[in-house]
Image: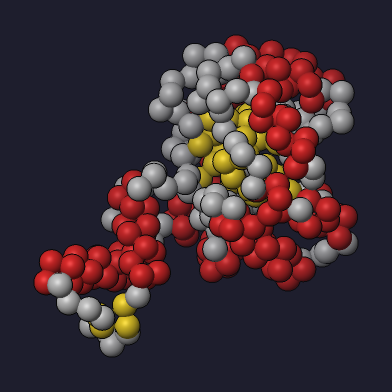
Length: 279
């Protein structure tokens, strides 16, 4: 089984080398060095030069992505060229993904590295499965700020269907379950926790953060509980016992019937808890 996807991904502005260094040393499962929204137009070139320098020797065990500026902006081509020259384990995060053909062309430019897509427009949502199905795409996610503006959505209720659609598109394309968009209210950890729990119920597997103080709350929300881990252990143990004994249908201690889908989910739960040091 492949490693579970990251639970926590921390954005850090590329024009702040001090913050990039701190983010790389943080507990975030992955760091996203941002060249887009967090960087003002006047310092885009400086941020790009920082990325080229700071990530040139980043170790393979440190999961890192670079969010480039969107296609069609004055900085996109240079951003992509910079990422293409970095070590192959540094991923590229593309905002405002809309055109599967353009994504395929991008994949061919950046070599053997992961490309992560953000859907941030109505047309991007409509093409979510096609975007997720492009060879070389490693994940699909939502950028909700721009999407809210375009759709004139004022609260989370208006995004529920869209979030589910992106989850389905990613899984249908064979990608990991997506991670949630950032929660902008940095000091509202209770609200962050509740939002994460709602996202987990929809099928999301983690979340991006804009401050290190959000990481523990996100991790706690997406790690399986003690009860979930124990149930997963029971499912796997029953299956392994049945295989060894050559028996057929199984019923768990609570009377529920055990099917193949439950076994796959149980193994994924145990892998998640073990890999992320939960339980």
